[in-house]
Length: 466
Ligand SMILES: Nc1ncnc2c1ncn2[C@@H]1O[C@H](COP(=O)(O)OP(=O)(O)OP(=O)(O)O)[C@@H](O)[C@H]1O
Ligand SMILES: [Mg+2]
Image (cartoon, rainbow, N blue to C red; front, top):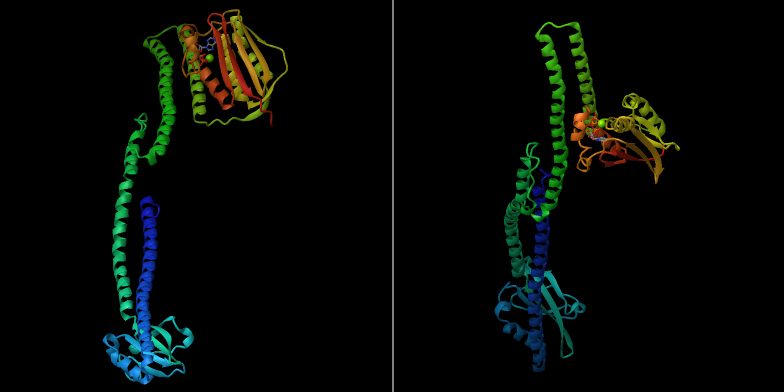
């Protein structure tokens, strides 16, 4: 479940929302409390100023006791009601309570603060354990210093702040739920293109590898993914189609020799014949079987190259002795045609390569040079090295290759029209050569002039590190 992008987005959004919401609420809670208490502070400060002001004016009139009694009698409104939450108290510097508001019942006092704390606000516990905000101010009454204390209840302030907290605690889960639902539907909506993309690619199989996902109709965020997916399809499509074509071409090529063998068998079995006729037929069947075997071997080599199952066993090897071995193998076919095989003198070049594969490369090239040569022609092999590469060129004096055929001769089963009537072959030789050369990190090029001859040049990296 936690592997789902949707769930991850929801969890992250809700976590961020919870932190931000909780932070904001805590901030607002303390701000509100501060403002409400400040409001009370403003009130008690103005009250203490007014009351001390009255005393200052009254001191001109005479006796303190009389003035205090008058002040107490003048206390109206909340100061006059018992436990109203508004109190005052007048204390001498010695700590003696000289007067207090009628709202304080007998025996009840406000805490007496030292004169040094004058002008500061204090939160204290008042009558009936109610929280009070208190301020004190000293007044000079004809040489006598009096401390005037005024207090206001914080009960309503705290009630307001607590109501705010309760509302927040009720609202929070509701807002949380609304947000969770909102984020859930939003992510569901945002993920829709991915679902559509998945649906689109899930119907692509080996039957419709040519199909592509339209990049223009996917959201920007999915465009790179779509491009990569389409590129991957193109990469897969090519070898897949090549394999399909190879399979059908191979079956087609194998059908000819098998039908030749079958027709020989049918003809021979149709009636009794002389021993020589049987011998002749078996010889022809044998030749066809040999061709078939050669074709099957080549098909096997190609499929091994395709599936990368034949690993190259790289060894240090001299090119010159290898060509000598190829000359020995092809020698008989060449002399039957009167073609002379020659290798230009020069130093040997040692490269790192797979011996068997390289033998296959030069056998194919030199066989071709003999096969497509004129009677009494020549095959010249030159070996050279330059810039870390070994170049082997195989040049013949044969029929040459048409320009339009040059780009096709490395394709599987491709044979030129000119060679089709003259020689037998499967058209696989050069495609095997090309694949082996590429696997060694080399390349092959061909130059040819119709009627004069062809030159195949193969380049291999020397890479002499053992
Ligand atoms: N030296 C050459 N001179 C003229 N044409 C050539 C030469 N080498 C190759 N070709 C042309 O290229 C074609 C492909 O060559 P490739 O070696 O792949 O097949 P093949 O010789 O026909 O059959 P295989 O080698 O499989 O028995 C040949 O059929 C031929 O038409
Ligand atoms: Mg060939």
